[in-house]
Image (cartoon, rainbow, N blue to C red; front, side):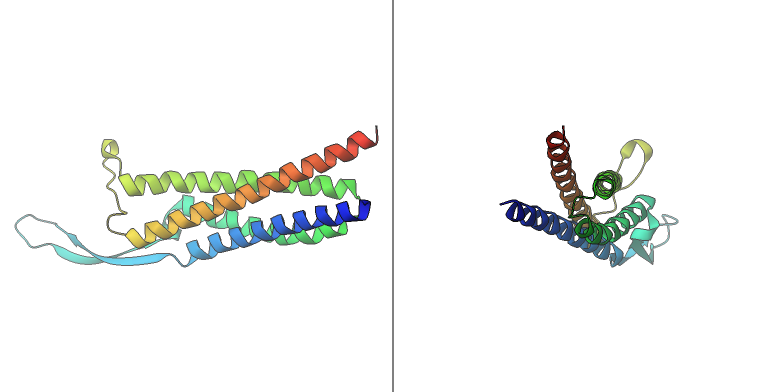
Length: 181
């Protein structure tokens, strides 16, 4: 019975870590390939016709998107590392399990902060801000904005996967500590 429970625990941990890895990797790739160029008319003087200038939108141009990219790369790398470490700690290495628990918690914070920052910038890009004269850009760069939104959503789902790992590991550590009392 104990072996069956250990196998089920390991399977759940494996599934959640693989899911977290896949989601954060897909989010990073989706954001990394996101680039759109449009020809935009620019009116310099009202008496002259507008100049048509090519303008490119890239994730590197916005610091919140750079942060999201770095957060997803760190989280996907950590997911692989923690997957390997969690199988070495199956025997009950409490220190290693606690370190993984703390690492998972950090990934939750990292992913949600990156997703939140990018979502805030994306909202300004979508709606603009008339008080500070920021024009909306998603009406021009629709494909770029859609990919950023998808990347943010997938990154948030990766954060949820890590949050489930935190809850799962916390319950497991709590049960183990209550048995030793």
